[in-house]
Image 1 (cartoon, rainbow, N blue to C red):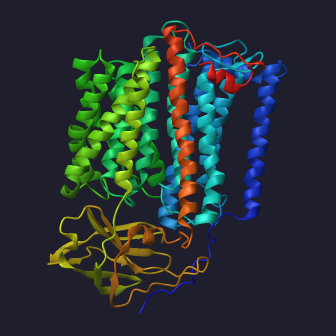
Image 2 (image 1 turned 180 degrees about the vertical axis):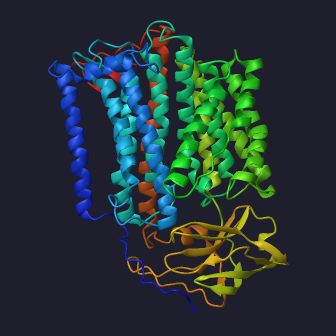
Image 3 (image 1 turned 30 degrees about the horizontal axis):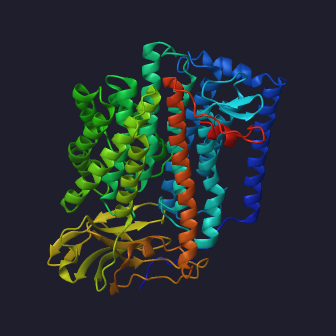
Length: 605
């Protein structure tokens, strides 16, 4: 029998309605047109609004001492990123508790994301059009228009993130709803926003007059510490599924992501900001990320997201600085090693108190290896960024940059690859049935299927809340729930098992879905069901029968775009480093036509 029968879900699946696409596209077009009008008016001297705003921003505490073309975009970008961060965690919470949207404009959390990402794109565009004189290290756009390298990078990062919104709808139309943070187009939104902090760091350095005179030492210290705290926030968004407790990939992926974020942001913070810089960055991170968690959770009334602390990692970085501060690359490697070991231990114990899915002994060996790989790679990338900001890039910079990225890519791939062993089944007997909920006794076959699990839970989501209950062993292969599980309405309730590389899910109750043509999976008084690959149950809305080559091709396109953004940031860091060091630019190749394009300017770097 089933309880509290409800009509099948009729929310649309596979893309937004055309009217919502037209409204969103029209709004974006109007905002872009306004930005173009302001930019053209500024360049021609007909509109003075941007000049006045830039002068005002250059006199504010946070950006005092920076030129207006850097001060105004930096302020706008940081505010925009905070708005987008709020929207992202709000949106993730809504998807976990409510499931898919009725449309992009029907989800209130999409609005802060859209405005935040457009503000980020506008920040870069303003940095490109504001300078009326030629900034050092700039790229020629037209005969008399030179755009700062950092402004181009910031605009590109914002555009890349903003592009993820329409591409996400295209992705859903082709492949269905991928209800996971790590969908390719979702990573565009997060990656573009998070990596924009690298462009902002380059902007601060590119905008500093000769020497280090951008404001007082205290003002510079606070500004840089806040920017690196922002970078730590941005890189930590990739972990959001673990923050809420519905991770869809192997547990060892979380320590890897924490270590990469800590290595990159905290090493940069300590080398670039000064003594205590890593601690300042962590304090700013806790304030921003914790503040968003409180706003989304207790204030708005959605799910509360836990946060990694990074406190032990910051102490490790500060300790290494006492010995290796004058050798940035050695400092980055040593810091990464401590982040991957001592930092791993600190986060291990923190997850036991703060996270829905705490780390377990099952992941320790591989988790430490992944964390060391991530910490060292992140530390090397952070050290290279600071050397670029100082104008001290080593000769082996390209090999070090490529090697660190390759290690991160291989480790991420390892974390994403799981298996689904055949022959695992669960026999479920329901008890204490009342009001659409019930307790359950679960017998796994074979009994040793969950000998040392990373998690074994009864999980329900998308029914208006999130339910995660760690099953308690009561016998050989026999487990029991500790609280009633939901078995009604739009709830999707399942047994989740993750051990080693194995990731299985066994449906307990699934509602019918008219839009997808899926029947109800009822919760009867006793039943036996086979385990299935976990992603098939969690991502029930994904379309089946799509050619593998199409999914692979689409994913490779997104990967190529992501790689282009990362390489562009590397190019920009190298270009700024040359300017800071006073190294002459590479000689321009002679052409038959004038080199007036952005591509020619980039080639001259």
